[in-house]
Image (cartoon, rainbow, N blue to C red):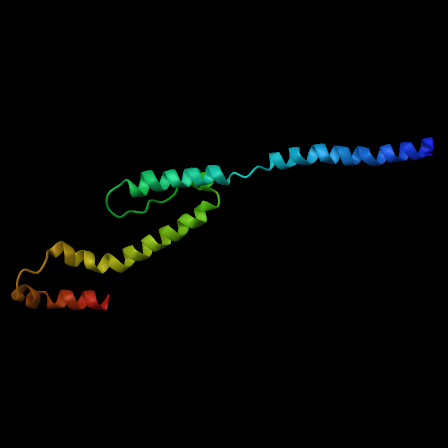
Length: 121
């Protein structure tokens, strides 16, 4: 048979446990994951600012977009760095493309210096 002091001790043991059981889900709900919202914002940005627009362009992110994307900002940095690298690699060809295409063998001979500079990079 339990004595009154033992019952009182058991009640005092369960109160902190009950408090923890009620408070823990509330605390976890407050630390909610924003990943779904960030993923949606990132997908919408890619669709409207990159995919839907013709040509090759990689816009810079605003501070507001960086905040909205969360961890996806580092994913976009990969795209941005690749775009910058491609721009640098293709830049020597831009001058040659502006001059027009070759229409004859004499064009190739006349632009030999241009071709050599493009080959050197």
